[in-house]
Length: 505
Ligand SMILES: [Cu+2]
Image (cartoon, rainbow, N blue to C red; front, side, top):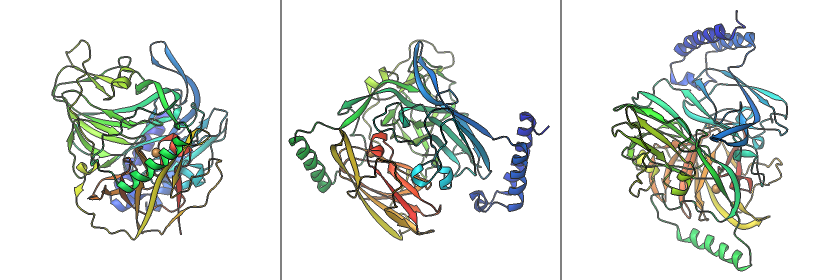
């Protein structure tokens, strides 16, 4: 009986409820402190069945992004996006990952406080999933909220590898309390395909608020660029794309989101791009942002436009009060016309989907936080300056943190920053380049404590866009021992040096 998937699921559901009830105290949900007796019983039951909760196959598959527009992609389970994996906070899960490709792979559990052997980053020591091999991963997913999984391979100049591939899937760790009342939830993954190299990009760079720049950073960045161009260097490579999709379909070629008047829809939106920053608007509607990177915000403010750097997530409720057939799409006309959008269709309405550009609006993380300082002072402060060396690495921009580029050879590198368990650490980030960097910290959640010198608190994230020539500070508590990767989530930047490591001492 136990070997039948159906009955096993029921059994696990029953056990899960039992354990869930026993673990309602907040401490207990942290996993390590789970009641040993119940843990053992649950784990024994799972071991006996021998079946994982989820099975993923990394494999190359044809994916139809529009009628008769079929691309070849490395995917999870032959689909894009990969399957939505639902977990329950505080319960152990087992995932089998089969690698059906010829290349060793890493599967990173983005935004989760998991051990280094699970996290999915070779730099931290996670074993690779061997080519034509498999790994079984068992862990207690946490914290609750909207997370995701993706490859953590370096791509370098290979535009079918790393996050240029289709290896992106969503994770939802069910919390005990949902953030806000809603009628149903919709998951959206924004992703571009068919990448090509270009020299110089056209990405929006002037949408962050506050907009003020730090003069010394700007002088340093501009003079370095001028000196490089004066030497006859071309501009470093950037990436452009031919196809833009939401949930793997170009605008107009997927199923519309069908809604009813008055419905409250909770959108979980992931920017699954390798390199691009995305925006999203729905004409005649506003987004009430309830969580950033899966973490509930103190001030669930209404905004007309969402902006997401690579790897960022936004959970937002839209009240459907403006009947029609609308394009929910990117503000960039070119990208939207090449697919970056999805149709929202009210019941009883038909016709061509309409796009109306929103009024200019600047994205400010602090809007969702509490004004003023956090009550906690940092025990330790780390200074980091990010800089670009134009076209210095075989035509690619080389990126440095405090003058050091992470080696591109894949060799293990000693940690540059050291933290002590239980201590609160502040990273003071200074961006001496004109690019916006979506900065990502592994295996920890950080709190945004200042942007361009203005103090804030309460916004907790795992990716933060740092504006060109701007400064920001983030705090994190060292509560998950082991090597911890810190990098820019833009694939080109992380592949060409924009990466460093923390360890626990
Ligand atoms: Cu970057």
